[in-house]
Image (cartoon, rainbow, N blue to C red; front, side, top):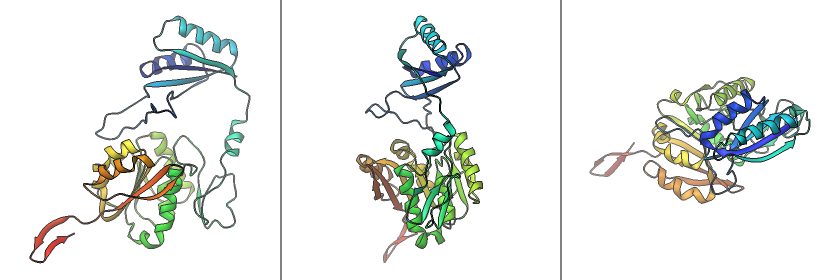
Length: 311
């Protein structure tokens, strides 16, 4: 098997991908941010009421072909058509692998706390794991291996003994695999809504909830309604800033707000974005990422001779 790797601009991704699959016999085509891990890296997100971003400014297309001749022919024909902003990066052999076995070997049990573990279905839980989230890797973000996910689960586990009695309604906004919603459910939260703009994430979260025998309402962001005692959002800093009014509208007075997907250098931006509603603080950090939390205080509604009355 051979892989053809091309770099192009966003507007060319769809027509080139279509040509690779329909005309040139590619077995699959993957798209990635060509500027990933550089200052030009772009996050993709789209929320209700916000303009949608569907592709990165510069994209890397990776197409798999059954043989070298097919990959070389596809590259030659695409370049011969004089497509603007199309660069051939490489054509190289891809070793035959048992991809299922390889994926499984790379996904081992993850310790969140000494007693909370994320364990894939093909592993036995560690002896000291009293709470286990069964989760297999899929198309949705959230396997417990990323620092942001671990910090959110760690926050839930640490605060559940004193706070879970008040978690009568929980919102996991941008739920991905559903791991945070599942973690909250296993720690005593009730009436949990898990929402995502990605249909694959919705399917994964619903499936993972069933595997873990917890009841979670899963759907698109329109599912979220009313106020919640706990609002979780592990996304990225830019969408979190834009979503501040929406997330805080859903946060009940006295409720907990937990945000992740934030780099250390972005803390002040988030504090300012959420200042009209609550006072964010850094509650945890790991590998350059931070977890930010806030408690929604009552709003001043009137005054009396004895001062302000808060609700």
